[in-house]
Length: 145
Image (cartoon, rainbow, N blue to C red; front, top):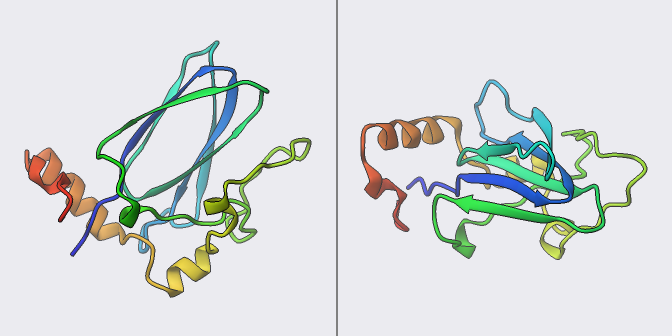
C-alpha cells in the first residue's frame, strides 16, 4: 500500500540557505533531476516540496532559521533519505562551503541503492495520491495510507 511522504512548505526566516529539491519518484520523467533555490530573510521566498520529492538544504550564513510547514505529522517509518552527495545526482553544492551532514544524511543510500532496494516512491503512486487530494479525499493523508 502506498504511504505518502510529507509534503513541505519551506521558508528561511533568518539568514540564507540554498534549498534543493530532487525528483526521486521512480518512473517520473524528471527522475534524478534537481533544482536549487536560494531562500533568505531578504527576498522571503519559500518553496513547496510535494510528497515523493527529495529535499536538502545547506546554510549559507552562520545563523539560519528554517521553518517547515508539513502536510502530515512526523512518522519515523516514512522517513527516506538519499545521499545528498551522490555523484549520480550531481547536486551543485557550493565548493567553498564544507557540508555538515546529519547522521541520517551521512548514512543515506545512493539513488541507485534506493532504487535497487525498492525504497523510493513510485511516480504513479504520487500522481494518484495528488489526484485523490484534489478530489477531496483528505483521509488519504492518514497514517495507514
